[in-house]
Image 1 (cartoon, rainbow, N blue to C red):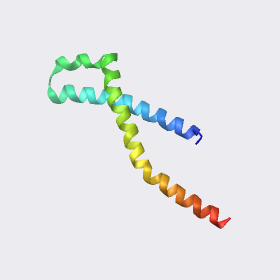
Image 2: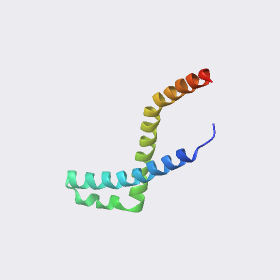
Image 3: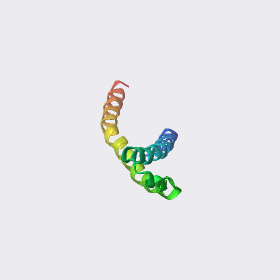
Image 4: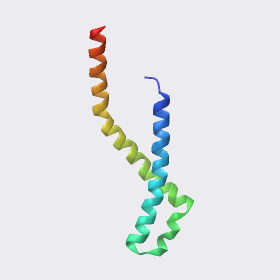
Amino acid sequence: MKSSPFLKKQILILFVFSVLISIALIIHGIFMDLDFSQIKRLTFEGLILTLFIVFPAILFLEWVFDINNKKKFKEIEKKLKRKK
């Protein structure tokens, strides 16, 4: 199966979203725990470590919700091929 430009764009969007969510998760953890010593997690290394957790999780969720779509597209393609 060829990789479409749409898939590359989608992965890039998910990656940027993961970076933003990683920053938000670190800040949320700091303010909800009221532990301002955790501010050190906002370093580049802390962001990368959080990103390594968030990005695969988002890709997994996208894959799970896309399974049903792939089945539907295959059904539609079969119906279209039969009509030709």
